[in-house]
Length: 180
Figure 1 (cartoon, rainbow, N blue to C red):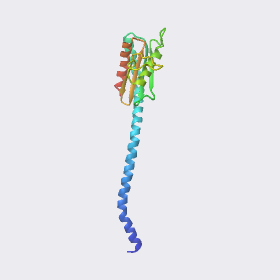
Figure 2 (figure 1 turned 60 degrees about the vertical axis):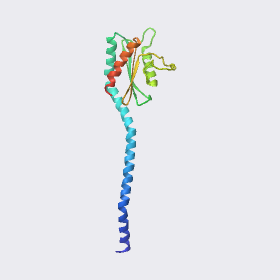
Figure 3 (figure 1 turned 90 degrees about the vertical axis):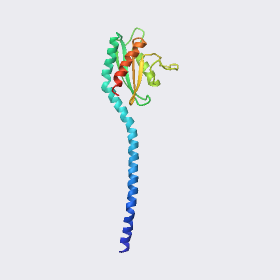
Figure 4 (figure 1 turned 30 degrees about the horizontal axis):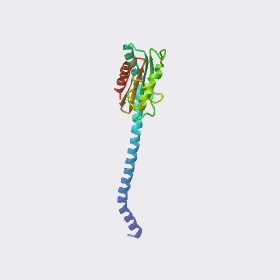
């Protein structure tokens, strides 16, 4: 054997060890990268799924809230919203006028959204906060919030007494939450 073939043979003996280390390193980096990417994607995918569920079922939910109001002979404004994630940074909402948008003294749409915005901040039913209302919050009861997979559902009704507003809002929450 000449010197060149001896060196080649020595290099070949080292290759199996180097290949094992290289393969392990590549596998570890790939696994770590995939896990990290999947972790970040799962929240995004969940939020997107939550939006899709909301959009696919919101009209039927609004119809259920409207029927609940009509059964109780009430008129006003119904609002249902989906907040993706664990804290409010955005929402998707739908509103429906059920017989009347205003009274002589009240903008029912403004009241319904005030209930919803309070719940979006506090993550508690409207009017159940133990602190003084912030400017823009009215502290009215009648809105209901529920934690669901991928976020929160928020429903509010304005136009009836608070107890009935809560009943109508609960119909919307219960209807939509069964899809999450």
